[in-house]
Image (tube, rainbow over all chains, first blue to last red; front, side):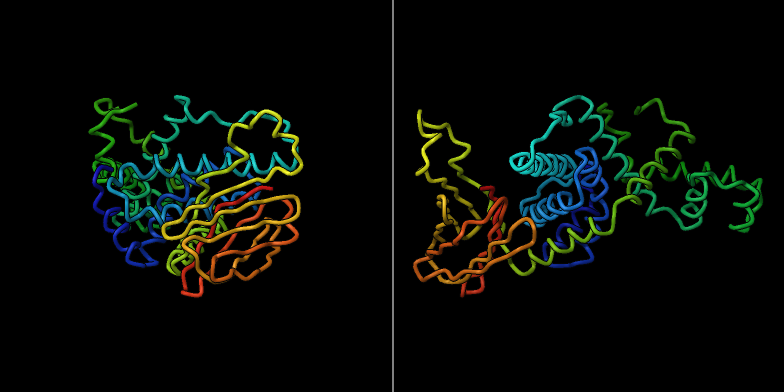
Length: 188
Length: 151
């Protein structure tokens, strides 16, 4: 995701007050922020509080953002800090029984962040696929899976054409610009 | 992973997981982002805690002193808000000094508004119970929202 031109453009537009660009940034990173709230098992009121502060910090920091690739790591750190803060605030009022909070410095946390970064890139790459690919792949990763006969009927293609189209679409996905950063830099 | 390319099956399953993660984000959580953007567009400055006597090392014997005063400082881009919290009230000063209003928002949604005088001073009585944050609106149209404070 180094120098991702899409993110750079979104950040610039959001800074200029473009709500659509902001929404696109949020759509991109909200799953990361939300998944951290889930790990800390926050109640809705606390998650709302965390969300409000994290996004406000992000919108405030947009002007200072130099490296879009650092954004997921920055968001993860800010979100964890906010989660811990609401938990500490609560524990001053209500005794907290368990002190078992996720360890943010563990190798597992690093691996989780890398996974989330891949997910962000995958969703971006998926959004850039041609429509026929998006429709087919959506049916294929459906849970429970949709039968090939049903897929063929819904998309109006031959059953024999599903396998090759699937391979072609996944190849496009794999070699897309958003996924390229991960192929170049094996960090894990 | 760079050379040893993942199989189609793995990629498809990972894509499914990535899309699922996005699908499970509740709409109300996304709303918190819209609200934050609106605040920012309204030029609301977020002031963070830069000093809190409760987190500083305590002097011997100070802990049990009923007259001890808790002090906190919130720093934003253009405005600093200092608080002194005693048993009965929250006293504060906005710097640089300017008149306006301070809204005290408690965690349970209750809010109270008090005036800030020309010297930037304000007082809230009785002090809020539990967590609260302050929204300062200057007469000049500048707004500052502080982090949460716990009393």
